[in-house]
Image (cartoon, rainbow over all chains, first blue to last red; front, side, top):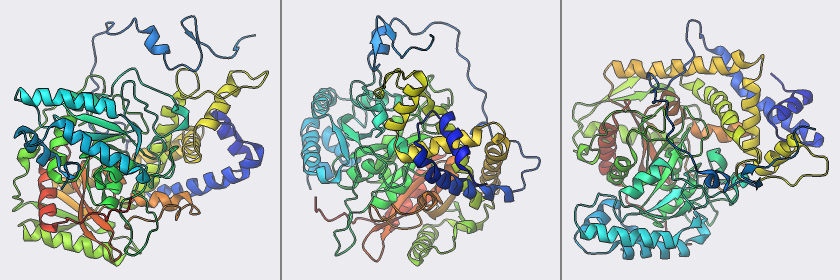
Length: 95
Length: 494
């Protein structure tokens, strides 16, 4: 299936990656090529096959619902591009 | 032979006999690393940490009873989070990131006394087959074509690991493998690389690419070294919910060299159209070696093989688009400079556009598309069904008595850096054609160097094992290695 420029713009928006208008045609072309390659999957008869959800059949382990970690605010914020007064700082979200 | 050229097994024995100290062994590697900058394999060097760890290892060895990896100098792929040491998955979006924690794999290696020499180059977020998507620039293969000085790729994504081990900058290295990223670079550089069964090695603290496919493993000079190092990396970890809570056998003890009566499957679907005659001949040579060792060779069919690559290139980007959503410029790494009036959405979009390279952006967008409303069933669910069929193919041949499967590791020898730059992304993806099925099915696979091509470049074969039977797989690989007698090394030019 060919990806048009509008779809490429929408995908970039959903992925939260800024793509300049001038770059959209090239992006649409590359994405179309990759998706075209995936079209081969339509040749496979998958009727009655369940989608694989687990690599090894296993029941995920459960842990006790207890606090095992904490009081590491400084460590958590250590790599933040902008941290103030013990919080991550971001541009204004609510007017 | 200087100490940096040793195997893990030789170094282990020499350290115990007091023939060398861990500090001297480490110094030998640090010297080789500084002389090997042209390979661009080590991208963050940690000599002070290495010497501190080596001194501790010497004390431990002196007191007796030290584990096998004690005092062994290693390179660590940049995908592993290492405390207070840059860990940026070869991406600008993690520039400056120094984790406050240690990955389970590196913790286990350090607990066993191993020494970290530094962090190794790779494709950005492990997305690539040539190490050309790295923010650090290309890693370079120590091997060159006879009579040529064209720079070749060491493969990818674990290209720095492969280059460093092949050039004797370290005794061994960690790698990770999502679609072939340990086995393809190992084959391109004439070394050994094993991707264990999914769940054998903890993924905790390894920067995630595609969580249902990612596994870490060792990249080493010999199969014995792979057995020793995998032992130290393996085991259950409560911090990784898919980590298997089953005992880890003694891998080195499994290297008996006896594979008489073992059944080796040769899948006819791996005989690709247009496969170079040299690869075909190498495969045949491998078949003869295993037969000669007493194995029974049987033709088998894995009918869904040709659909593995398209299924992989739906599933891996889908998982990546979800995993890489965390890079938003808020908690760590790069944040774009904002213009007046920019809000949080602009911050996300500009940060991600600046921080991610083109291949990573493309894969995130492919993943976003195949998971988007209206296309989820057509692409993602269909790919997961095909994945179930690929896994079933393997289960069927194993149930029929096949113990291991022999295939080529790569469709060619190492190619030139830049040679694929004009190619369609799909051309690059074809590098993974023989390796990607193993990740989809969660199986162990190992690449072993077997010969040289007409231009003097290494070629490898792959052995695929039953789930959790790395011990037996390593023994098969050990037999192949001994019979092949591959001892060639790259001629030093760096």
